[in-house]
Length: 500
Image (tube, rainbow, N blue to C red):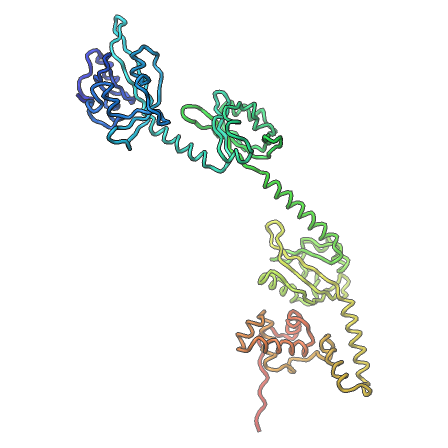
């Protein structure tokens, strides 16, 4: 007998049409527990196409299909809905897992309920087993439960019918230090996750109405008596057949600590910057406009802070040599730092200031900037110049010095940048001209060694000789010296003398 066979005669024509078209599975069971008829939906929910495959009786049905609760515990014979209906118990729904004995890997989740149909004389006529397929829903819930438990983001689920917490994941327990049994079943007003919210009453109204709760900062009471600063948000969901609210939390304590540490660091930097006796300035890397200068800078240059901010050193005519600013920018972009370099500044009154400049790249917010450190060496330079003048005066009548002493005095004067070493381009050797041109191009010793096919030691010797001849002590000064004479790259070599 299959589903298309004629239903029992005690079903009216209208009832037969209704039963055949239901989405639920319908199985008719006689009072002696004989299975007399099933609609197509009931057969499909068991993976069969004929009613005989269900078994002739309820006992045979149980021999062909495993029937367990969702926790895998077998459903006892006396607890099966047909047995309960036969004993006159009120119908109640039970959720079971059903799988064929010979195909245990095939299984379905069914909600079952059974009730008795009475005839016109109020006598029991037959029983109806109603099957509602919940396989997809429970599979989705199982996936949700797995994802909920595994999700590292702290979360709680509150049942809306009685506002009690019914789920908590490991992330929330780890964040707060609670045990799950301390929270499951607890009422929302007992464990108040909105105690620290400014608009608490409005949030409670949204919760009771089952509406989305936007992000709100709050404080959660901890089991040790402390409080945890978090951000909480609520999203309505269904867990099984119950309406619930999923609460997710973001722990903002690490961010608060990081922000506090950042503020403290900024305050320390600001105080050190402002109170430093050394002249300091911060400029943007792209336009080199001053973003901040300290009091020592204003004393050194004579420029008021209001004059300097928002303007570049070039606009302020701060640099004695116009190429100084480009040299600093290039060094910062290439390596992020500029080692101590002697530069000459121009004070607001036009007087020269000799400085040793150190610079380094820093970030102010998201802006790339440069920290400039100026050490005033004007007095040292003046002392050196006075010493050189004294040496020159002595050397004008040095007949009473030995030859070795005179040579040492001349050598010292060259090392200190005196006018004796202020040679012209025509006094440089071909190699020194090559080295000077490569220095103007920003090449380092290694790059010059590769270009000129000379050893690094030889390159260093040529650089030292070049410095002594032109009276400079650093690459930046050599660049400035060269550019003042129109040299920006390799220069033409001197013509070789004609033979004969």
